Length: 301
Image 1 (cartoon, rainbow, N blue to C red):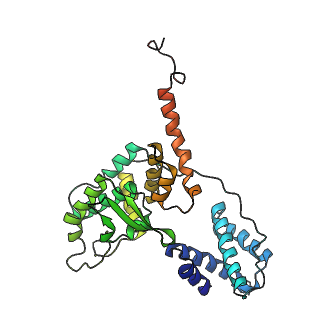
Image 2 (image 1 turned 90 degrees about the vertical axis):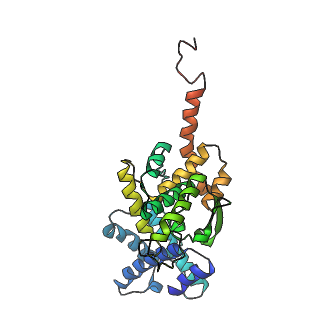
Image 3 (image 1 turned 120 degrees about the vertical axis):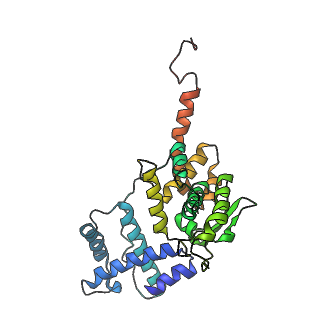
């Protein structure tokens, strides 16, 4: 298992978070097998099915996406074992992943985004930092892991770009608007120097009061608190701002390939989900603008 995980990380270049998810799924399967006095090499297709069925007893009724992910992990694991001549057969080959519905992501409208971005108030170091983070999450569509991984040198304040390392260690450059650049400048000048004291040596752009880089969990908690403060009724996570970034770009006329590049999606099909969300905007424009779509008025008559 450790050799397989090392292969994923160093040869295939998968992100640390992805490798960590693989590790958790494989460890869960190993514990299942050990509970029957067996090891991974003793796996058969019926045992794999028993493992997937047992998840309902330990995790409630898991989402089809969760089951599909575990099947995918096991398929990759046993494919690797077969290629390395460690296992003779792949017991997962005949197991099909469950069909998954396409649940549309939660998106904030422009008014909700604006009120959320106004929540970090005052000139104290922490609110200045939080304001810059919110502006970047929405203004550049960053994943939270990309945000927390930023170094000071990754933001080009003169050129108006941010450089980030995405999934699969793929680097991309994303344009950043003036509101986000202004928020970052204020944070760098009036906020960051006073976080962590004089001993702060972290090269991370965003740091906590101890001078260390922020965690994904701390950013999530911060965002949830501001969303509650703004009285936004939707469930808001860092990814909600990324979804909103993409949806608002498409609704404003951006082409799909450009949005794909800014989001760092390897496949344009991943980006296409946002076209479904932007269609509502097109529908609103149609009914507001087309003379045969509106109810007739005295002026029309």
